[in-house]
Figure 1 (cartoon, rainbow, N blue to C red):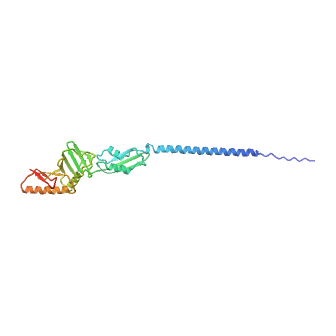
Figure 2: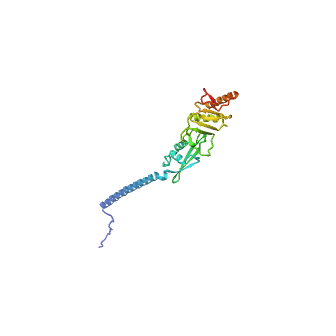
Figure 3: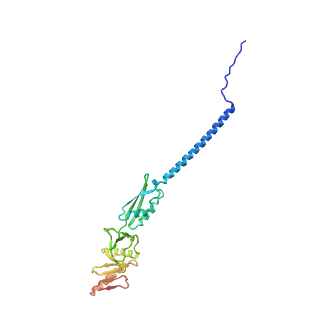
Length: 264
């Protein structure tokens, strides 16, 4: 009688309780790793944001390099100071307001401002100089005013439409504006007698002019539009009357058109 032996190899498996335990551990480890990864990512993002914000607010984005072009006698320091750009952030600087502030300076007709960033900020202020209207000269120095009456210190060789010698009183102070009546008078004299470029000024008698007979004509200023034209016509009419009568005068005073007089 034969005996049959059946060999069945043991199964290579762990108890069910062990498998569930290992899966739970793995899931908890996975969750811990996910939380750590998220925390690390958040830390990296925050650190990156802080570094980026520090760099963006740093000196490389601040305006410090400003070049002034074509200022023609207007001090560079005054232009840069008026612009208000020094130290401003590249993206928040108001270039239109800066150009307007420079444009308001004496001696400036117009101004433009451009800025660019190439790892640092570079700005250029380009000035269009104002055209000198009148050059005021005295023993104390000389100044000039532009077409809007703004007064500026003058260079020695500065050209101008009018040259005014101040006989008494002070020069118009730099940085100020001429009295509107005086500015109106200058404009009207340029239009009325463009060939006359030299006048005198006195704090008592205002603008004065020496005519072709070497008579001094006291004109004063222009209290209304057309005042200089009225005074010049009156001065020529009085001169003709005196010449017809054989009278040589030294002074014609037409400051007040209703009460002119002459001095022999």
